[in-house]
Amino acid sequence: MIQQNDTVTLSFTGTLDNGEVFMVVSPDEPLTVRFGNLELPPSVEQALIGMNSGETRKVRISPDEGFGPRQKELVQVITNKEMIDKLKPKPGMVLSLKTEKDGRELMVPATVLRVTDSEVEVDYNHPLAGHHLTYTVTVINIER
View 1 (cartoon, rainbow, N blue to C red):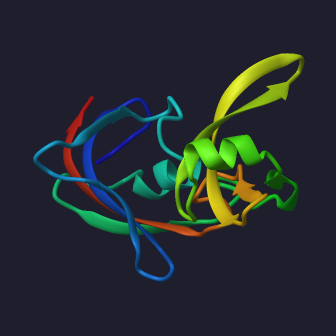
View 2: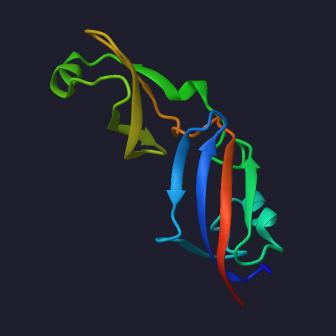
View 3: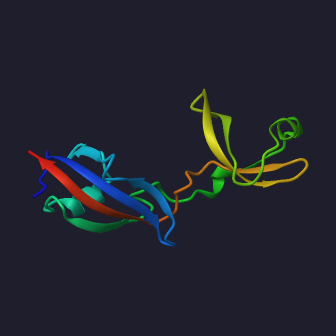
């Protein structure tokens, strides 16, 4: 049975409430983690404690435990005609945009939501922010 500090090999499928799959870790290329090192969301790790090799369990986590809540202030409109003409953005595209944080310039991903001739509305939230996530996890191997 899985205990704290065990090294555990897992396969899993991550889905949203609408059934959309956002991640698959297949048994052919499993994930190996050490329990207690916060390599998995804490509630997922807690739910797997006590499982045996070969067992499968579904674990649902809230947005706070996953990628956080959606933040309205991270949806912004950019008015840069030169950028629009050069990049020709379309809804759904992910752009790497410059932003400043704590006096440092960073490149961050932003999903294009809407495009007009003079504006691009982008979302800097993580695509999974605000979603409940369900992981269907199968334990492949446990090492003490």
